[in-house]
Amino acid sequence: MTMRTLVGTIALVLAVLAGLLAAVYLVEPAWPQEAGAPAAERPAPRTDLAEIDGEVMCPVCGTTLELASEAPQAERMRVFIRALIAEGRTKDQIKDRLVAEFGPDVLALPEGEGFDLAAWLVPGGAILLAAIGIGVALRRWRRSGGSAEPAGDTAPDSADAERLDRDLARYDL
Image 1 (spheres, one colour):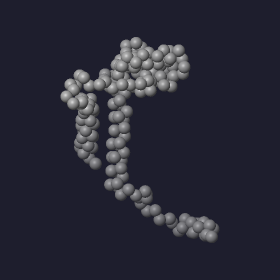
Image 2 (image 1 turned 120 degrees about the horizontal axis):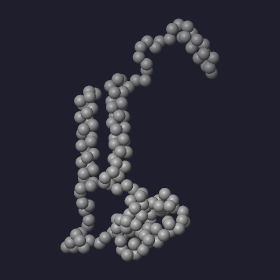
Image 3 (image 1 turned 90 degrees about the horizontal axis):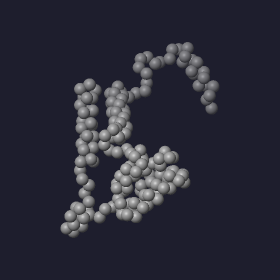
Image 4 (image 1 turned 60 degrees about the vertical axis):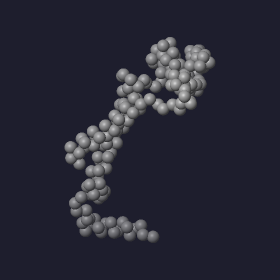
């Protein structure tokens, strides 16, 4: 594989990934519309504590709220979340209120913008580079014949052949 082909392949893969990311972040999700209901009147999705507590960190324990012990701070957060759910708040609204109350470190998952975007892109890029590296290695291996035999003269000399025959004869059943 020439360097030019490798660079072209990498550029193609990166372009496809950029297109997928753009599709995820720029395309508005298609909500099923009720007959003639405008977009502003669509019902907001309801949530419950089980959906949120895996995505929120306890500021005292440093673990997700679902794994946090019965610490007083964790219990206060659960009560606060339940009160927001009772008000009819959506999951995003509740998370926004938690960030306003406890700061951005309360979210277990990083945001998809700014510096936090790197938390999503760096592992994805590493996986992509590893896949490309494996693909290049496999392609080279296949072009070289893919045999595991060493190159060159591998026939044993007469002394080694006699010793091998004696050893094999010893194990014949």
